[in-house]
Image (tube, rainbow, N blue to C red; front, side, top):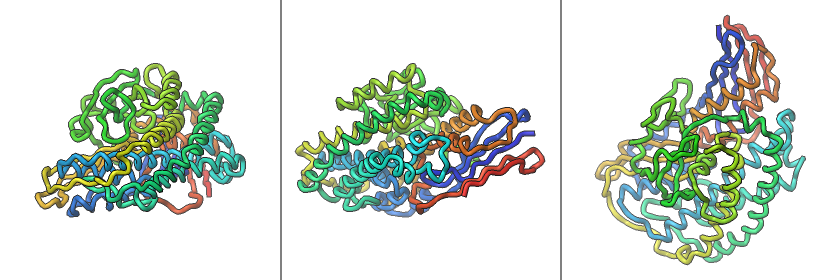
Length: 476
């Protein structure tokens, strides 16, 4: 009879979840499931609201990346109004999204994931966290904190506050960027560049010591989806979609996000509140795809800025075709931070950025509008259907973490198969941490909300075929 190992909750991720590892009769891993055990219900309780309220409402979907939802929602409103927003508004939205990617990626790399590969997989949980990183390498920890602060400062200087800025609206944005705020952002760029360069050098040393993790932490063929420019460059806001396979071949290009439902299907698993999107033409399981930094760098032919372009060339050498190891999401995040800093530097010199023509106005010109943007964790879709008064009749949100759901399940199973064999009931702490880290590679934002600081307990049970608890490990 099969057995089951449960890891509940998974720690150092944004939200609450658990992992089940199923053993076959020989005691080897047969399968694994990543369960998201929260339910939010935004798609339903937004029904009946005016569409122009949605950026402010859906910002509350996430305390880590509210900007991503604000921008996708505003773009859906643009589509309902059928307007082209003024150039200044478009560039200001882009600037805010760049700041959002910087702050979120810095949080993921320095705070949530670095304690594992910098302090050691076998370090005790009480030490293997951001506070342990501060004690072991205070300069690095401080630089990571300040890099995230820089991204948040961009958001605050544009939107008035760091979290839930009610700034991007259907048709444009509410307020301009002042010369004083532009100059303040520019003044912090040199420090940010120094930090990301140091982080990249540190990561390359880390890669040389973690070849096994690169091979077994979510290293499998899949499709990859992300936005690109018309010439196939890296894009984060307003681009078309490209899908590539694990050989690096483009299987679909310049897809219109407004018509995502023609090529993206949504399946449901009874074990999780996450939806599981897939590429419709291939169905399941062949249509499984990944989104986020790893996917965006796989689908992009170039970054569009010189320093990040040089790093992208080095990154692509790590794969035969596409780079397929999920452990290398960490490297991809650092390259994206570098690209964001370079694009921010360019934008600050753009004359349109200080313009005051910020908003297009119109009535209801379409009864359905889709807004898409690249959130830090991957492509985000907001799909609104309204009546003639602009009242929402249907809302569909496709979150990046959901699109990675099938890949996260496969990642957990791959790691577990490597470490759990021959019916052993031993569940050492380093094993649990490695399984958890497979999820951290994707930086999932599960509840899309902030949580209290503190230490979450971890309980793992190995259950025999008759329901007897063979072994229990508790982390308080």
